[in-house]
Image (cartoon, rainbow, N blue to C red):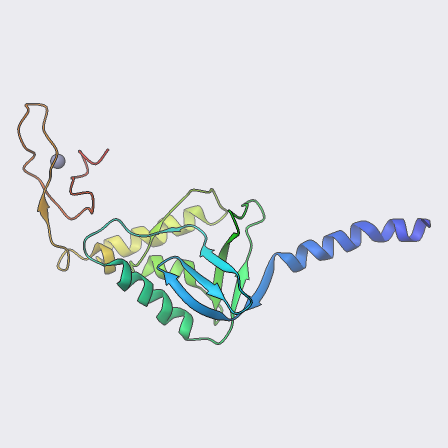
Length: 177
Ligand SMILES: [Zn+2]
């Protein structure tokens, strides 16, 4: 190996990493509110999102909302968080369409909950977006649409909890864990 080609190696590695950090794909099918398949056969899960545990929206409504957001552009950009590993063939990605973060938009519209597992660079930003949707009572956090039920938890006195809750678990904030 010549000295010159030796110098080229780190440069080539760097440019490969750069290319791998971002790519453009077409959307084939939206699977649920946090994932879709691509035209080239990959399964992508939107990084930092979870399905909201709320009675106010159904899983199908979350899926439809993601489908609507992705339908606005013929190609979407997948951006890798270099500190996050893909899981079992599923690519965890930030997804951008028409220059907008779709992950963040799902949170702002109240059709997803922010998830910090796995930890990722935009965790704080995503948590803020979810709080904003909760404050504005959008989507999953809309109290008008939510059908409340009485908490199924038992109090320390041994009686049924009287709080009403819209949590999917059927338990209020105090008895959810
Ligand atoms: Zn309770």
